[in-house]
Image (tube, rainbow, N blue to C red; front, side):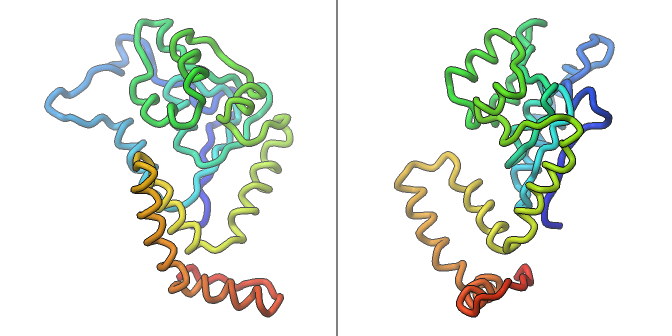
Length: 211
């Protein structure tokens, strides 16, 4: 597996969040268990060493914004709306904030959380939530183009690189420098690194083994 593409069914919504009907039991937590299913999903996604590309085919709201935040890159259809409307119903995007606050500039994130208002796909791109915006009929082609730019690169370099970037999150600058300093010496030991440098010297396309 080289790339994971995360999307929604149809063209109306990527993910519009949890069911807010009181009978749905969305907020019926098991207080004997410190972890929720949604939080475990976010944890699992953060642990993967495969790049995740979001295909934002429609509205991305509330919990859907958390799914967007776990994507490494994303492409959005132009009609899509983005937002954290939780305050409109008396709750707050607690779990989403754990990931999203590192993606959006602080004042923009505060605006999304405290107003609950939606923003357009173009604004989402300006705010750093998505990489590209296109018309709905161009969405598949744009996603395929982005995936192709990842899939032809060294899977080993990407695997180790994503692990390093995730591990570095939350470190101080000195800790991050020391951690990355140790990572540099490991990369040339992989088959992909040896093949990549040989291919560069021989002016030919590399043949990746993923090892």
